[in-house]
Structures are given as structure tokens and as C-alpha cells.
Image (cartoon, rainbow, N blue to C red; front, side):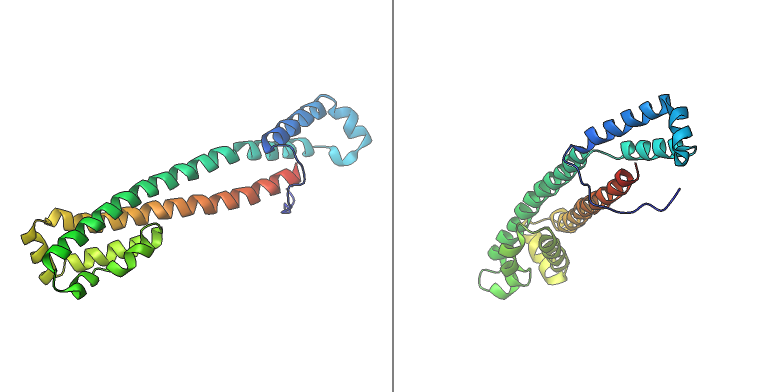
Length: 193
């Protein structure tokens, strides 16, 4: 099979309609294949099978709607996790303010001034949770937090939250990148069929 060329889709029909039309045209060609092949020598086999392979490959790709739906689901999942992370971080800061009421520098060691910028941005919140987990596990802070009622399980949940956000963010970014690659591949297949 020849090298496929990437082109911009140049039609106004929905992609699935174009795919359906390509299959219909192929099926019509198959019915009158002998007539076509006697008049157009370039349409002899493996033209028909290559055409069908291109249609099947394009048909195997998930529809744009299903890809967008999957990305929306991943976004909702990470947004829900962000809400949980904000609540956890705010709880930590509340405990720190009780413990270090006269020492704002100790509260700032957990990145409090970065919270406003980080609270709705995935990557910044991941960094903030990583800082909070690291600091909360440092001996002077760890014991003070535990003595005040912020348990070791709460401290461990900071690190777990950071890892969960990181994993979910990566899944979302991968899905977005795969969508772009899928659109490129779809263009290649459509240009060939």
C-alpha cells in the first residue's frame, strides 16, 4: 500500500456519514467491479481490498463524540479530585494555623501563598500537594500535627492525593493527545479512501 498523505478534511458532512458513503460506494464498485476494471486498469485488484481495508480501519476508530465524551469524563473525574484536594489542603492549613498561630512562616512553609493560584489548576495543585506532603512528614511538623489531631493517615492522604491527581491528570492529557493523533490518522485514512 502506498504512503498515505496527511490532508485536511475537505467536506462538510459528518465523519460517520462520509464513512457510510465510502462503504456504499465501495459496495457498488464491488457489484460492477468487472465493468470498472475493463475500462480503468488501475482499479484492478488489490484496489478493492485496499479500499475496504482503509474503510475498516477508519470505522474502527472511535467517533469524535465518544472521544470527547471520554475526555469530558476524565476532566470531571480530575475536577472532583481537585475539590477533594482543596478540602484536604484547607483542613491542613486550618490545623497549621491553630498550631502556629504566632508563626506565619511555618504555615507558609506549606505553600499557603500559592494556594489561590493552585486551587483550580491541576499541575499547580499537584505541586502544592507534593509540598504539603513533604513538609507534613518532616519531624517538627509531623509530631505537632499529630498532637493536634491531624493523624498520620491524614498526612499520608496528602501524598496519596498528589499521586492520584498526577495519575488522573496524565490520563486526561494522554486522551487529549490521542484525540489529536486520531484526528490526524482519520484525515490520512479519509484521503486514501
